[in-house]
Amino acid sequence: MEHKYEKVNIDAQVPALIYYFSKETMKSTDYLLRSPYIPGHWHRSIELSLVENGSISLLINEEEQRIQTGEFMLINSGFVHEMHAENIEDSRVMMVILSYDFLKKIYPDIENVCFDIHKSEKSKQRLLEIYEELKQ
Figure 1: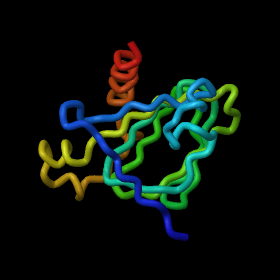
Figure 2: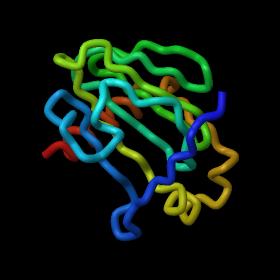
Figure 3: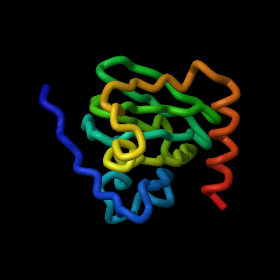
Figure 4: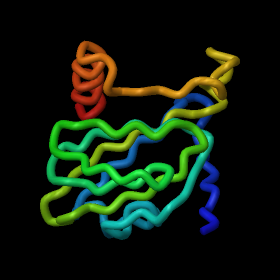
């Protein structure tokens, strides 16, 4: 199956996009947010999302995961992924998409890095704090 390449247009002044996926945002004009299902796609940017509430079924490079409230999902650059909210009435996800070009400037070898969010509990705690700051 061929998956769609998603061109992520990020402003050079702010090197990230923030999406909020919930039943309230389902009326958005942004195709990403109009359905409880985001079809398989890939992009160069790194995507880091926090499931604030509910349960999300996530497929990354054909490996299925179930992500629950309070858990992060990290999609590395170039990884094919799709997402389905198991109950859109109850699901809320805050997605942060980090600019590949920005990351490349600060770390030129970024294409050879594969992040694993599950290795450090301290890092996950710091990410939770950052997400709380972003929400405010």
